[in-house]
Length: 157
Image 1 (cartoon, rainbow, N blue to C red):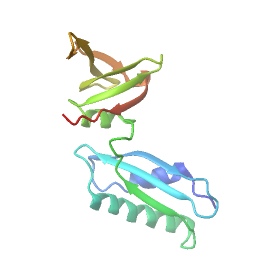
Image 2: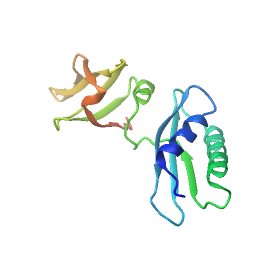
Image 3: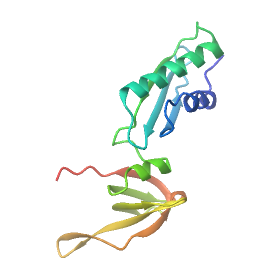
Image 4: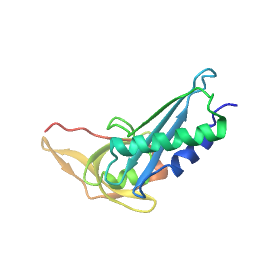
Protein backbone atom coordinates (compact mmCIF):
# COMPACT_ATOMS: atom_id res chain seq x y z
CA UNK A 1 0.00 0.00 0.00
CA UNK A 2 1.56 3.30 -1.11
CA UNK A 3 1.69 6.38 1.11
CA UNK A 4 -0.72 8.95 -0.29
CA UNK A 5 0.11 12.65 -0.03
CA UNK A 6 -3.48 13.71 0.68
CA UNK A 7 -3.75 11.24 3.57
CA UNK A 8 -0.39 12.31 5.03
CA UNK A 9 -1.55 15.93 4.70
CA UNK A 10 -4.52 15.08 6.94
CA UNK A 11 -2.25 13.35 9.47
CA UNK A 12 0.06 16.38 9.52
CA UNK A 13 -2.84 18.79 9.99
CA UNK A 14 -4.21 16.70 12.86
CA UNK A 15 -0.73 16.46 14.44
CA UNK A 16 -0.29 20.20 14.98
CA UNK A 17 0.34 20.66 18.73
CA UNK A 18 -0.73 24.34 18.93
CA UNK A 19 -3.43 26.36 17.12
CA UNK A 20 -0.96 29.02 15.89
CA UNK A 21 0.91 26.37 13.84
CA UNK A 22 0.04 25.51 10.24
CA UNK A 23 1.16 23.15 7.48
CA UNK A 24 2.99 24.82 4.59
CA UNK A 25 3.47 21.75 2.41
CA UNK A 26 3.53 17.96 2.39
CA UNK A 27 5.46 15.99 -0.22
CA UNK A 28 5.75 12.23 -0.61
CA UNK A 29 8.41 10.98 -3.01
CA UNK A 30 7.30 8.30 -5.44
CA UNK A 31 10.05 5.85 -4.44
CA UNK A 32 8.39 2.42 -4.18
CA UNK A 33 11.08 1.05 -1.83
CA UNK A 34 11.39 3.76 0.82
CA UNK A 35 9.41 6.92 0.13
CA UNK A 36 10.49 10.17 1.74
CA UNK A 37 7.81 12.25 3.42
CA UNK A 38 8.70 15.91 3.81
CA UNK A 39 6.42 18.04 5.97
CA UNK A 40 7.04 21.77 6.22
CA UNK A 41 5.25 23.45 9.11
CA UNK A 42 5.36 26.98 10.45
CA UNK A 43 3.70 29.13 13.05
CA UNK A 44 2.46 32.67 13.41
CA UNK A 45 5.39 33.18 15.82
CA UNK A 46 7.67 30.61 14.16
CA UNK A 47 8.05 26.92 15.07
CA UNK A 48 10.49 25.21 17.42
CA UNK A 49 12.47 22.00 16.98
CA UNK A 50 10.40 20.47 19.81
CA UNK A 51 7.17 21.28 17.96
CA UNK A 52 8.56 19.71 14.75
CA UNK A 53 9.55 16.60 16.72
CA UNK A 54 6.05 16.37 18.22
CA UNK A 55 4.48 16.59 14.75
CA UNK A 56 6.91 13.93 13.51
CA UNK A 57 6.04 11.50 16.34
CA UNK A 58 2.30 12.02 15.87
CA UNK A 59 2.44 11.54 12.09
CA UNK A 60 4.66 8.44 12.45
CA UNK A 61 2.11 6.95 14.90
CA UNK A 62 -0.75 7.62 12.44
CA UNK A 63 1.21 6.02 9.58
CA UNK A 64 1.94 2.93 11.70
CA UNK A 65 -1.72 2.59 12.68
CA UNK A 66 -2.93 2.98 9.09
CA UNK A 67 -0.23 1.12 7.14
CA UNK A 68 1.27 -1.26 9.71
CA UNK A 69 4.62 -1.24 11.49
CA UNK A 70 6.42 -2.92 8.59
CA UNK A 71 6.08 0.03 6.21
CA UNK A 72 9.42 1.59 5.33
CA UNK A 73 9.68 5.35 4.84
CA UNK A 74 11.74 8.41 5.77
CA UNK A 75 9.94 11.22 7.60
CA UNK A 76 11.31 14.75 7.77
CA UNK A 77 9.48 17.57 9.56
CA UNK A 78 10.97 21.06 9.52
CA UNK A 79 10.17 24.70 9.02
CA UNK A 80 10.49 26.24 5.57
CA UNK A 81 13.76 28.13 5.29
CA UNK A 82 13.99 31.73 4.13
CA UNK A 83 14.76 30.39 0.66
CA UNK A 84 11.38 28.61 0.49
CA UNK A 85 8.69 30.64 -1.34
CA UNK A 86 5.69 31.99 0.54
CA UNK A 87 2.69 29.81 -0.27
CA UNK A 88 0.19 30.38 2.56
CA UNK A 89 -1.58 33.63 3.53
CA UNK A 90 -0.42 33.11 7.12
CA UNK A 91 3.19 33.24 5.90
CA UNK A 92 2.57 36.69 4.44
CA UNK A 93 1.03 37.86 7.74
CA UNK A 94 4.07 36.58 9.62
CA UNK A 95 6.33 38.61 7.31
CA UNK A 96 4.58 42.00 7.42
CA UNK A 97 7.27 44.69 7.25
CA UNK A 98 9.74 42.49 5.36
CA UNK A 99 10.83 42.86 1.77
CA UNK A 100 9.64 40.31 -0.74
CA UNK A 101 10.20 39.67 -4.44
CA UNK A 102 7.02 38.67 -6.24
CA UNK A 103 6.41 37.27 -9.69
CA UNK A 104 2.93 37.95 -10.98
CA UNK A 105 0.84 35.83 -13.34
CA UNK A 106 1.55 38.28 -16.20
CA UNK A 107 5.32 37.62 -15.79
CA UNK A 108 6.12 40.95 -14.11
CA UNK A 109 8.55 40.78 -11.19
CA UNK A 110 8.55 43.37 -8.42
CA UNK A 111 10.35 43.87 -5.14
CA UNK A 112 8.84 45.68 -2.21
CA UNK A 113 7.50 45.51 1.31
CA UNK A 114 4.53 43.62 2.69
CA UNK A 115 2.56 46.27 4.57
CA UNK A 116 -0.66 44.53 5.55
CA UNK A 117 -2.40 41.23 4.81
CA UNK A 118 -6.04 41.14 3.76
CA UNK A 119 -8.38 38.19 3.29
CA UNK A 120 -7.54 37.75 -0.41
CA UNK A 121 -4.10 39.36 -0.71
CA UNK A 122 -1.81 41.96 0.78
CA UNK A 123 -0.81 45.61 0.56
CA UNK A 124 2.49 45.84 -1.29
CA UNK A 125 4.74 48.91 -1.34
CA UNK A 126 6.90 48.51 -4.45
CA UNK A 127 10.58 49.49 -4.34
CA UNK A 128 11.72 51.99 -6.98
CA UNK A 129 14.96 53.87 -7.58
CA UNK A 130 14.69 57.63 -7.32
CA UNK A 131 17.87 59.64 -7.91
CA UNK A 132 20.15 56.74 -6.94
CA UNK A 133 18.15 56.02 -3.78
CA UNK A 134 15.52 53.39 -3.12
CA UNK A 135 12.02 54.59 -2.28
CA UNK A 136 8.76 52.78 -1.67
CA UNK A 137 5.67 53.62 -3.69
CA UNK A 138 2.21 54.00 -2.15
CA UNK A 139 1.01 50.47 -1.22
CA UNK A 140 -1.29 48.70 -3.68
CA UNK A 141 -3.37 45.57 -3.16
CA UNK A 142 -1.97 42.37 -4.69
CA UNK A 143 -4.28 39.34 -4.77
CA UNK A 144 -2.84 35.99 -3.71
CA UNK A 145 -4.37 34.55 -6.89
CA UNK A 146 -2.17 36.86 -9.02
CA UNK A 147 1.09 35.63 -7.48
CA UNK A 148 3.10 32.92 -9.20
CA UNK A 149 5.98 33.09 -6.71
CA UNK A 150 6.83 35.17 -3.65
CA UNK A 151 10.22 35.03 -1.96
CA UNK A 152 11.53 36.90 1.09
CA UNK A 153 14.47 39.16 0.17
CA UNK A 154 17.40 38.67 2.52
CA UNK A 155 19.22 41.89 3.38
CA UNK A 156 22.55 42.08 5.16
CA UNK A 157 22.46 45.84 5.73
